[in-house]
Amino acid sequence: MTFNTSKPFETLEPMSQQDMDQLDFGVIRMDRNARIKAYNKFESDLSGKQVEEVLGKDFFQQVAPCTNNFMVAEKYNTEAALDEELDYIFTYLMQPTKVKLRMLCSPGQDHQYLLVQKS
Image 1: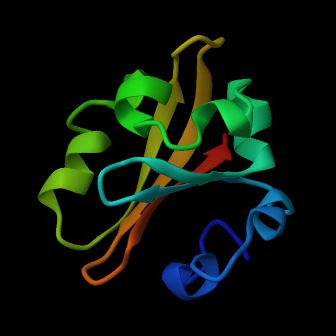
Image 2 (image 1 turned 180 degrees about the vertical axis):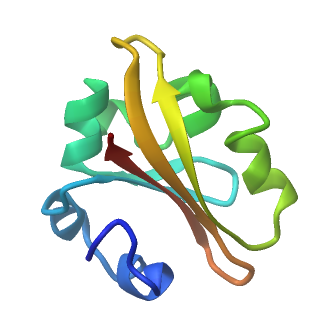
Image 3 (image 1 turned 90 degrees about the horizontal axis):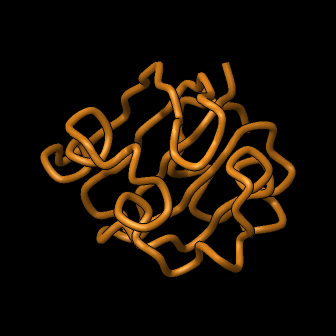
């Protein structure tokens, strides 16, 4: 799978944690309430947060509050379907880091995703 894959849900949904850990970009799998269900190794290394400490937490409120704004978190609340890329800078508890985000949600899907590619 690549960051720009054309059918992301068909690829991401069946992936196990181990499969996601092989990817060269970050993957955060969340339920529709933004609770983290999977957090891959790339994202763990980038953020400095271990998988065990983030699972079950609200991504926008507890893990990455620097994304709890109209550009990222609010998109998941206001868009029925979302597949949007955004140049962004992570700043929470880390050196400011330029990234490209790919925000994904779709009606009928149990999960929503945030993909993170280091710029």
